[in-house]
Image (cartoon, rainbow, N blue to C red; front, side):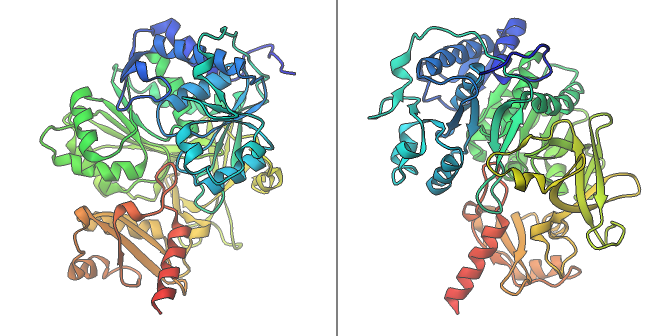
Length: 524
């Protein structure tokens, strides 16, 4: 039975749109796509209309038989309706479990099994595609289709006009949202957030938003299943910031969208920012009005920050780099300007947020953590998740007192900046930092759109390169660019679209390394 908290110590995602609508219901939200679940909406809606759609869908989900504290796996084709429906699930006190549209059917089936017969909220494209070969009925309590109808499934279309329901607020320490880790090292883990831990994540993000004094249009291109999307809108919707929500990262379409909407604040994944470097010289000047760039998912290359900052025509644009993890939310960060981005140390992720987050370095081999002997990065924050669903022991192994060890290694500079050198699983014995090498070479070769250094069959560093328009890499330029670096194997060139990625556009380095080994084995 659900409990109502005596005081509001949490962030309740299902109430965010309604609360924001009460303050500034006329604020505009622009989409670059149509929502399959709400086709009549088109590509613009107000915050008040968003709140109305969430309330409507919450009533339909209740009529479908979903009740407080029950788990609802949300696995749909990409679109802003994922946010609408997940927020509606939360509004009736159920727990949305966000499964990326990019997950393969085998992974979705394994996660459904781990969830022990949850409800499944999905669409025909997923049922007929990735899930077609799996016993969905056996893995779930009920299937709810967001559009159309399917035999044996409940249709939300058929429940239009269902009675509205009052929002249900669970106790702030009960599960409120589940998202999954990036899946760069195998089957994703299901991260359990509560209303209280979501409030802990909200605080540092609200602090960053408070630096934006002027009302700006904010363009967001992040995964709809990542907790970042839900926290970003929890911060922005009440601030009357016009929003541009993006499905597509293809540069040509982004150029047209930004030329029309003129965003002053852009947030996306580091790899999307790399992809958008070609917008710098676009004749429509799509980045001219950007005052703030922000990324929270991974470290970003200094050369990318420098190029994007110089494309802005605002007086003093800023690039915020925030380091965070799925289990903890944002942890450390810093800002860059045109004056220092080009000479930035890409391994410097920034500083802890006083009163909100903290970090420490723990020795891996008995030596004091330093650049030459990096230690485990451990962090402390009120935003740390409760556990991994179904894998509590695995989560607890990474908890050390009040500190969380996330699997990254690095050191603290004399100025107190956290430097990340590598994921522990990505460390190559002969190379100081794969990420540092990538930063350096990408800064020297403008023709590269991506560079990933992974371990080869004999643990040798193998550079995988992608070039603009897939032009052949010039061997002489490559040799000159890496002449003063640790020796590496000859570069392997492949199209950017062939790199294996997660929902947040991170490169799956282990999978890429295994792919190269398989190809070499076949060749021999």
